[in-house]
Length: 207
Image 1: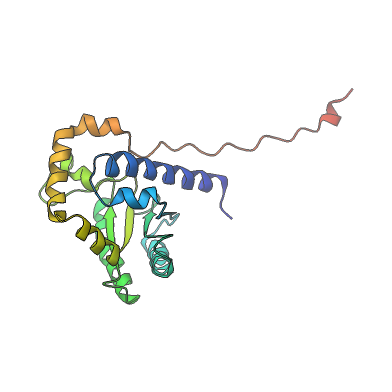
Image 2: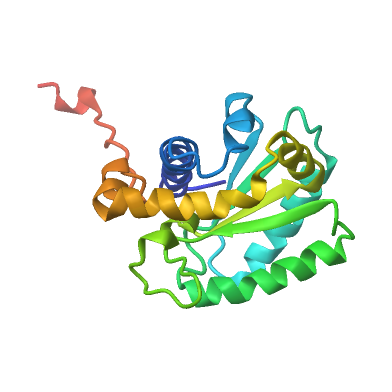
């Protein structure tokens, strides 16, 4: 059973991720394919409480298997967030190789795909504060599990899919840091769950 603090963390992470998806990914049209699955309620949000890569890997394996087994009309894609693990982007980037190994071990290469987002994401050759890095930044370390068949359909419906990357770079450059900050899509500050109120035996207070 999860503690009140864990339950509060899970709720906060999901709320933050939905805000990021709506305001940044969909709002800025960074991914033309995201709005449809969001509106249809086909995005499955999972918050991992893992504090080490091995535990996160085990949860990733479970979620990959679950997505593969799920009906696409009910669950087309999964966002697996890890607010307590791999906060350093380089560590997270190293973990992605292990994630691909897990995908291969499940024999799901070519069936599912793993994309990633991170609060400190940085393209090679860019400065940490380069605004273009924000195209791949999310409030928490996130593994995005996608169906290859859904990607193929989306690309067919959007014939200029290869231009998305360049358009996103231009969008962020025009938006700038102030514009991104105005979206308010960072992780919410931690607020510990309120302690339960003490039970008062009123009868003992009677004269």
